[in-house]
Image (tube, rainbow, N blue to C red; front, side, top):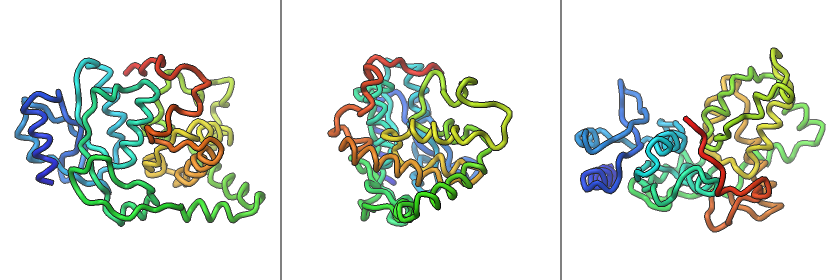
Length: 269
């Protein structure tokens, strides 16, 4: 913790970053906070709570960066957060030259719960590396089902959906200007539960883009196991294209045929 706070304090004090997107305890709750040089004393209250603080900091950084495109900002990242940043770089939503990482390594219990293959950032300022989880037991259980049984199980989950858009709104990778999930010609309105195509379209859009942060599943009031669905989608993309989501070494997204990623405009906030 002291190492992380000292790094943030130095970055702000020396003017190397205009602000730091991290966490602070507010009324006993870990909440996102924007730290600045003008309120440097607040850095003493900066916290690391990877298991308790579950907010899309990547998404918050996009909002700040879009307002101040010339500034450099620091951000607290776990392994999944950094994967998200790397994908956002590829899609032209953030400039890697204007982002400074303050890295966190998740504890073993969090890595096991998330079944995370990379539960630490490339730069570690808090915590220590733990054992990654190479294979998902939850995905393996679904894979073991017959097609008819798996179809019935997923249909049951989808029928619990109340179309609150919580999964989309919390997702760091949802930055489109217009969302197909709201297109009247594609999605029927006034249906509860919504048509099954709602979840299927989102699953298709997340394949090869999901960073496995788990926020969608945690945000779902219907307890739909979205993470399992998107993990499976990522597995298929890896098998078909050899693409590692969130890895700069994997090169551009396999969906680059949809357009020049570098020219996509940042979503207005």
